[in-house]
Image 1 (cartoon, helix red, strand yellow):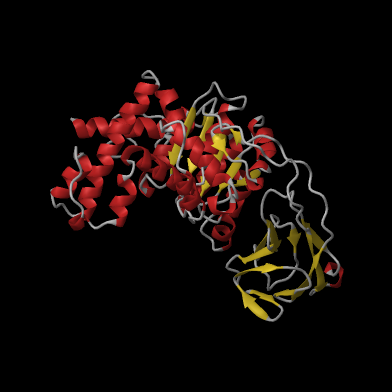
Image 2 (tube, one colour; image 1 turned 180 degrees about the vertical axis):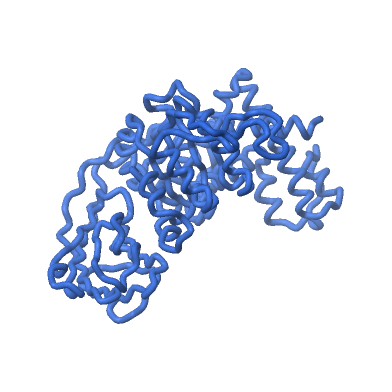
Amino acid sequence: MTTAPTERVDRVPKPRASFALTVVEAPTAHAVGTRVVVEASHPTSVLVGKSEACALRLDDPMVSRRHFALDLDEDGLRIKDLASTNGTIVDGVLVVEGVLRGGEILRIGQTALRVDRLDVSTSPALTDATSFGRVAGASVEMRRLYPLCERLAKSNVAVVIEGETGTGKEALAEALHEMGPRAQGPYVVFDCTTVHGALMESELFGHEKGAFTGAVAARKGFFELAHGGTLLIDEIGDLDLALQPKLLRAVERSEIRRVGGDRPIQVDVRVIAATRRDLDQEVAEGRFREDLFHRLAVARIELPPLRRRRGDVALLARHLWRALGGVDDGPPEDLLRRWDREPWPGNVRELRNAIARHIALGDLAPSLAAVPSRERAAPEGADAIDDVIREGLPFVRAREKVVDEFQRRYLEHVLERAGGDTAKAAAASGIARRYFNLLRARARQRDD
């Protein structure tokens, strides 16, 4: 497990205003006056609609089950329509997403709601922690999550981790496992994007011998493999819709039935689900079962994108630079300043890859991007990259060869520094052991 560098952090964040939404018109008179308050301490989006999952539940036939979501940010109260049937209207304008500052009137269906900005209240002091397990960050957005993560790590409840690609969802799931009561049990990852829909049931629940063509022996599924530990269902938003009722049964009853089997098998598994998708919208559009969502989302954590984590780019860059074997003085300051201005659509994963390239290639990394190859002479002591470029391969194949060589060298280097210990090497790399071992296996296949 890696430890984030010590950084000075502010104990008290800049206070943010709270907002209240109050029903001022409704189909039923008793609904007028009901309201919901959105505060900075709230860890997830606040939902408004007809569903039981909504913080403000409206009895209006023209309102969708999940009509819109609310989140606080530094600009005000962000509102996002969740693909509602009849839309969300703010002061007479149909909106998909926007920022409210107080005083607006929202109209959804036959209901009108007034937005009020409340007095700014002093936020509670934040933790001094700059990491939770292998998840690092000293921004307000991250430090407000750590106390919740600590509480969830000590429990066995199901958790949904949401966030854009590369925000560290798998790393957080592994930290919740490693810092909880199941740490000595197995940690198993099932990635819904890597398994064909027809095979998902067999992979999750196992199969008996002869259950289908090619089932020459009985096989345990991921639930059985995770018995006594934690099962991370990665990218659960991609789970086949036909399989979702069976997953719901497995989670509710703590039992599974293998494909081709005639008896239930009891399993003791904590389920953590991760997704890059907006599950509220997936439920609203019928692509994800609402009952399964409720069963999995006993707790929800939304990891913010790197572009919203002010100050974390430099902290993470220095941390990853050392972890990836860079020289002690870290990335140059001009490089840090440039990286701090980047949008990082791939988030922490993209930042890690950028750092790994600079450590491996040095000054050659930016020059390759900036100078056309036909104008660049081969430097002294030409390396694998120059050899690949001179082969005249198509771009995709050339890139594959360069990445393969980088991965091979990187794995050799980090394993040597870790004394051959793959667990330590994976931790130093900032990636999950499962992925580290997968990279090693692929490298050996290429060598063979």
